[in-house]
Image (cartoon, rainbow, N blue to C red; front, side, top):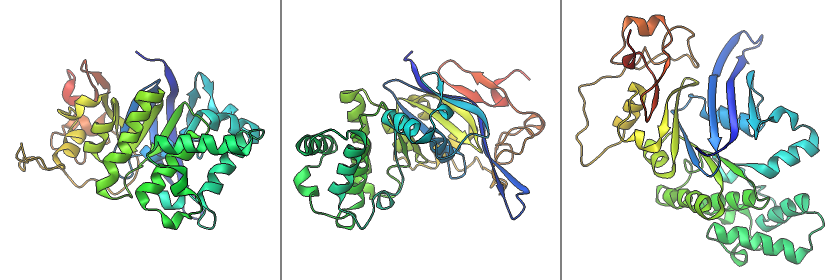
Length: 320
């Protein structure tokens, strides 16, 4: 097993809403997870599952309400102040969902990339800065001549996402956290973007966490996956588990993908579920939608059961 670079230990995140903050939403609920060196980890779940909140906590945009996040054994809350944050972001970079919001529309893209280099490598001569930028752009399928002099609005969404990846690569990070990196670009270019991450893992030894809601794309790009529902991990294992998922929620995600080689089973019905965000605190978080729910599912929280290849948080796989 590869060494752990980033580790989440019993991490929870709650938000308070309303004028008096009386409404409490638990976006992430006691998550234990690790990102291992040289792997692509897929973090899968529908909207509201907590996956983007996890990404933002790893990137220090949010702080955990409980638990801790470690980078190579060091609590990331120790990276504070401008110097500490700069040190952390040398190792851990983010690529975000909206490529159009990733660049200042008033500034030329090449100037933005040069600013990144000047910030992290202030003594580097201009010609060396452009050489490093050219190298990063080539890794994402672009060249510096087609970027020079152009503003963000002059690029397509797919090109801007490539530029976002190139910008992250400029500081030579060990880990990239990619939060829904293909959800806002054309379907025809999504695989191309995912292939960039796959190539970087294979050629550069880059470690990547890809957050997504599309089971097919997550399976394609990942070595290992964790599946989130209402802030909890309900299934985890190698990406192949998505071919024959064990947890009823992961099965529901799989059934939502049309397949020409397999007729969709319409006999199994899943409930709509509660509109409340976060875990209910009683029983299984999926019980109100699960077609296999039993009395114990509504009374007691299920344990995480080791099935060998996969781990599943479900009463179906225990001796009750």
